[in-house]
Image (tube, rainbow, N blue to C red):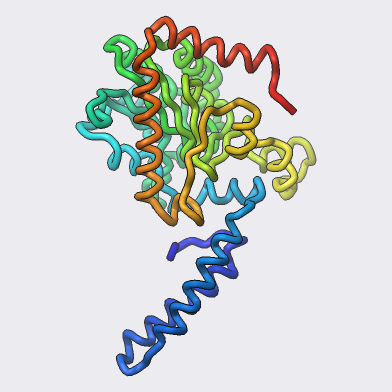
Length: 321
């Protein structure tokens, strides 16, 4: 059972809650036999979970992508990479805790891993600024990508951000310039760059990490130029129109794969990544490793040219309707 249920999961929460109540009563009174009733409720909950997630609307996918129990960047780094050595600071202003990164190994492949970290509880979320990077975060990422390029290390980026931090201080320190420089650095790398959208891919804050040779998305993650709420506020002057905005933005992994914006969709367990954290992390690890091995066969000039061609083609030809 998950601790946090989304709005559309309320009927499921009731059934799973009743099953847990029966088991709690049985634990308190050993003479009670509730095994049959509990198993019947479990089967009903399993089927309801399948039905709920069979055809999620774009807005519901946004909710799943933001689920607080969904695995975050730190979880992936801890599980998939060995010899992880964190590197801090942009050598200019400060260290941005919303962006984490460093040297590591993925199996026998030395890599530079960079990602957004949202945090898991109130304290860590405040420390990580809810995954919203400031200019120094993007400049740290540029520094780490420079280092990777110099030592011929592939770069793995894990994207999970609502967007770049929109505060006054961030704007004063050149937020848009830092994002543009980070995107430019992604395009100029002579080493493989594999990006995975593991939750939210919001705005230029995501693009700055995800302009890769291969861009992958988890099945229920989202990737968009603006959040549905922000889009609704601008277009309809009403943030409550976020459902309509989510439909119009074409932000789901399935839509973006059809449009050619991303290259691959990584499946999630039934009920989302938060209901099978280990399974999800393993699937992401296999996908990254496969892409690194495939891209490792290409020459530096070829990697850079194919990446550049990929994004110029998107811009010149546009996207399919």
